[in-house]
Image (cartoon, rainbow, N blue to C red; front, side, top):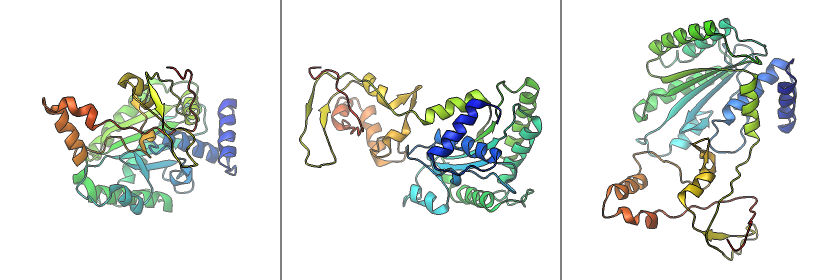
Length: 320
């Protein structure tokens, strides 16, 4: 691997997750899939890259495939049903992510073309057509799961499923304008053939992009907030070291829940305070309160609790 930084990151990734090194291109595929899907992993928990890595014999040209329901990765019908729950009428968000990783120093149009063709062929089952490409068992399972979710829950979707395609290589330069223009035309043709999808995006990621994404996977949530008053609570649970109760302003709260003006969804995984969908009794009641001139003043009283669990807490000044 010619890029020394990418190479060191790949080796560090393999070591940290106790993965045996294989062929260099396979290691890069797994590393790239890890970086991409970590950015979509809402739970904040570690996940097995084997669940999304599809590179290998008969991969149809797709090295990583991910299916998300409400921004949570699912790898089987059982996992999907567990997330959807008993309410079969609930509104869902469905997304598909595809990764093509090449251990090359430049972007190639032939790879763009093959990747887009592979994405189109991935949805052959849903369109009740015979797949063109010979599929591995991993790709076949992913395609059948996608078909099942589309056929079963198409009327539960808030909007058409989103589709993100990532072409990753070790290029230090952007793809040239000719390749980008051809790619844009191919995506338009793909949109015409897959009208059940929306917002199909195609991203070219070179060494700078993948480096930045990998660094972000190692960042932990840190925030410095200012509180006016707080008091400690006595808890008998030996696992809990300290408990504080306080009130903070919303601008201070945003320092905890936002990153680059986007909500850090994964911090709500254990303490659910994220958006649960429009057709939800709790959110309907909250919306009613916000729209009521008489009840809006009660909003802070009715919606006032957020529990923050942290491994480390440093109080800069006990008197502030």
